[in-house]
Length: 276
Ligand code: NAD
Image (cartoon, rainbow, N blue to C red; front, side, top):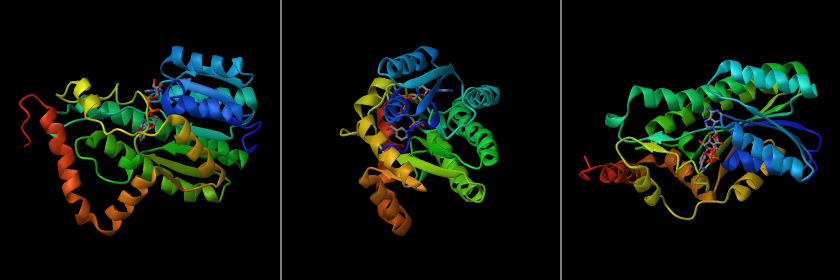
């Protein structure tokens, strides 16, 4: 697989989880990687690890919710390498809970990072790529960008927005040589859950309640890279997510109980454990 050799790839959220694994695997395949993360220490660690293994990488502290940070990231990449082949808009956070308990600040925070971050990264990279006549934008949504997720509504809304942007931009980009793919994973073993905020529920309870059997980031990234090589529109995994999505579209009533159980399970975790 030397598809990525000598390509220039920017990865937001490259300091941890799926983003970190993307950086490492792309560098192993010969790409030059720009590791961008709000946590400079983590971005630095990823870049240093890549360089220690003979790969090519540099890092930058970037807050994706800042348009000027993202603009600077892309301008600096083009200045250094004269091109940008891949823009992975991957950084994301999770904030959920019963909608009655969520503050507007929490809604704004999740939209600022998960939606505005992808909006800035997509549109700024798109202008550069359209001018180049080539490039691939890869936006990380989620299985929750395709289906409801009661109890995680702000996250779900942000990811639906990412799916809408990416699917439309894919057609706009087709005539100017720019590819766009959307990633919709189910559970992947990362710290996103440990760092997750669920309004009025202690984080330990959230982590304890998670289903077991999440996919390893290395397996997820292998699927993602294979999807990119095939220029897939939607990269959806694991198979259980593909099936749930199909059922949701064809027989939505079948999943009604599952969605109700999701919000009831969150309500049970709140003090008092009431399900209404
Ligand atoms: P993670 O928490 O392990 O890593 C996220 C990285 O993003 C961290 O390094 C963090 O510092 C960085 N980040 C957070 N806010 C940022 C900001 N404002 N600017 C720049 N960087 C920022 O999470 P992950 O599981 O690897 O998630 C990566 C992407 O995959 C996210 O968009 C997430 O929503 C999505 N996703 C994850 C799962 C899963 O089960 N892990 C499932 C579906 C979708």
